[in-house]
Length: 276
Image 1 (tube, one colour):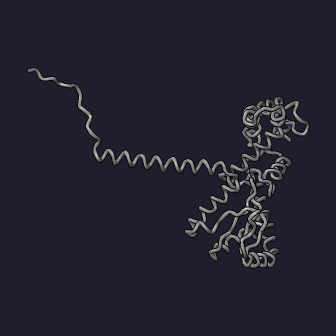
Image 2 (image 1 turned 180 degrees about the vertical axis):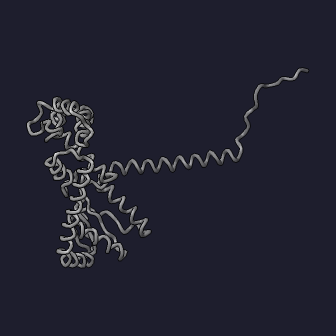
Image 3 (image 1 turned 90 degrees about the horizontal axis):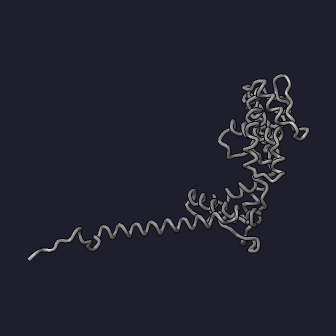
């Protein structure tokens, strides 16, 4: 009698190890999906609410207790024994938060859509901080003025070092605009990698707005990214001139391309430099 052979191996029941592995993979994928959903949810929250949640995470890492930071809406009002501290005075809000955490008492963020109205903090903490703020106001004001002067001097030195051929009046204009305190412009940014990068970005922005057709392009409805790309060649040429790397032909080309722009933004070649 002839025997019948079959090609290949018949698949048997899955082994225990394979079953465990599949179960683990399923668990991991569920956790990953859960984290992704939480991340997507947080990304859709208003910016200040996201900030409040991030603050909770920071406090949890520092004190081991996320309940020291919470969110409380304006309609809920302050908890018993708490007062409202409006946003604006960094010294008061920072120290109210610090002393409340040190005392293991919760600080409530009072948000309103895209902005934070302020904080609810224990009234005793607020009283202590406001007294300290009043007694140290003069000394703190002097310290701030001295720091501002140092920052301005440092920025001026960096501008002159990186752009030795930049006209003096242009340097002061860049300094007064990009490094203006409270302006949130690039010179005051806390997210830029270094002071040297801040200076470079500030000069690029000045050239773009004052010596190219960038603003006209925006006014004509051109997208910001495309407008920047269109004027980048001229920005680079003028930048190289102010760095002392340019030549007369490059300067003449940059000057010719800038004609027809707003009067105060024209680039005029004089004595081997670009005047604003």
